[in-house]
Length: 399
Image 1 (cartoon, rainbow, N blue to C red):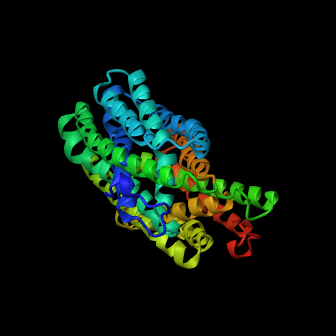
Image 2: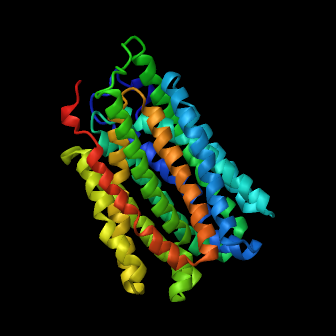
Image 3: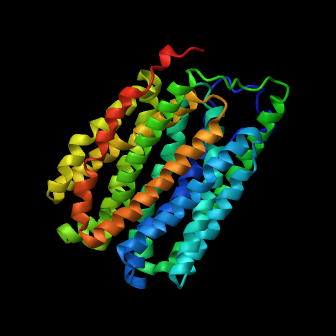
């Protein structure tokens, strides 16, 4: 970790220790978040929950984050809050403790809301820090930052399989101890960020001039939002109900289902990392084309696959589909210069919250049909990738 007092007036080259620090904290944050999804089978049995109630837990977490993240991002674009980072981690800690000791469905919803609040505070400023430390390699920085979250999401089911399933719901709270490490790291990152701001206090603010006309910008942001909603709806449904799909269709045990969820989420983490450097090399639009539309043959095949091919296809889907998000965020940040927090808030917050709404809706649909029908219906969502044709070419921007 760089000493805060040594932060340079400008980040002219990639400051890898800072990017890795926020990535590690993103991992810790998302381990705590993913434990909620990973313990759904336990909660379903302990509380007699139906799929609608399971979906509402995801809804509460993601919508809490979605309602607050864009607002926090817009506020911090004007008044950055370097030390808000450890505060966000602290909120997730509180949420995890509540989830560990909850004895009613209402407390489970409250714990989910605190985890969502932590996410809302953490993501806009940490995304800004990653971009500040990128040295112009925005795709690499964004993918490294995001891969930490995906690794955390993948580790959650593994911890649930080998710890929570063995020791019960209360053991969820044990992992809150890891957030103390995250709070310390984020305090140091906040110090670097604050020093960077002091060193650049006399410089002219970043230009807010749009690289394209307003209509082109609005259309592009709308398309990027739809693509993110589509991707998140599919992946939220898969991560929320994959274990139930494996159990219902193939008779897989709960622990084995958790391990296979870990494999899928691990593949997604690898895909997130691959998307950033590829985007820096070939352009964000290329990655978006390849990721959203390229995954379609595999999602269409998934509902008809046997267990072996289901595992293979979900790995491929995780690798390809998840690679789009870094490119989408970088593309949107280029469209709206000087509004990094707002863009992070929209795409980490609003779009993920809409994914939570989709998860709840898919749960309701599963209750009246079946999990297999839901997976069949979701297989068509990547057709939205055709909208990528409406995105402008960055090499044609007017500034």
